[in-house]
Image (cartoon, rainbow, N blue to C red):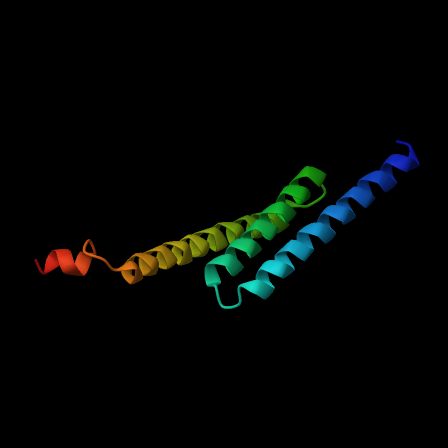
Length: 105
């Protein structure tokens, strides 16, 4: 493998990490307190890191298995906050078709 290609791969990886890190930092800065956005961002970061670890092939199973469990847990908690956010949005929307008004007709 020529040495130029190693520097190209490392440079490309560093650029991706910097751009994605800036994007995640910007999301955290703009949406303070939004648990769904925060957890979904962390889940995405962990997913990307796990994919990189799997592709490298140098990580043992005892490291990847707990990370996979953490990824699954974060995904489920993110889904919970997403559904909670949707439920609250529907409740705040109001109008004649809300569940409360349909129940009392």
